[in-house]
Length: 50
Image 1 (cartoon, helix red, strand yellow):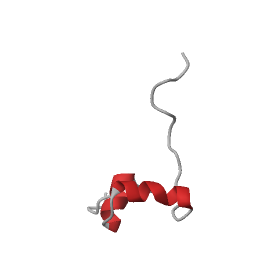
Image 2 (tube, one colour):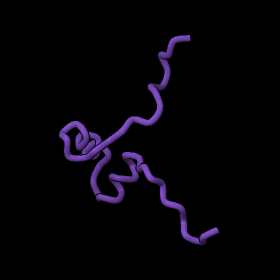
Image 3 (cartoon, one colour):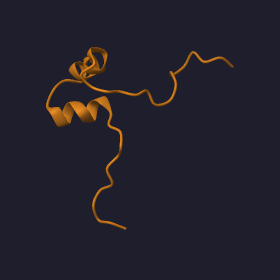
Image 4 (cartoon, one colour):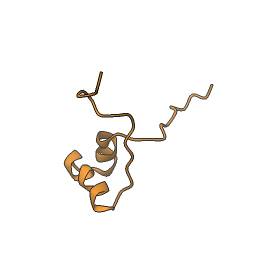
């Protein structure tokens, strides 16, 4: 195996904010404004039907 740390294909809001040196709230507005492509992974937490 390689000694280099494996990079994930996807980043969290926190990871993007740290990389761009901005707040998480600023990152969360970017997909809504169309300035950053985002995807939802998984479903909503809680409130699911049994």
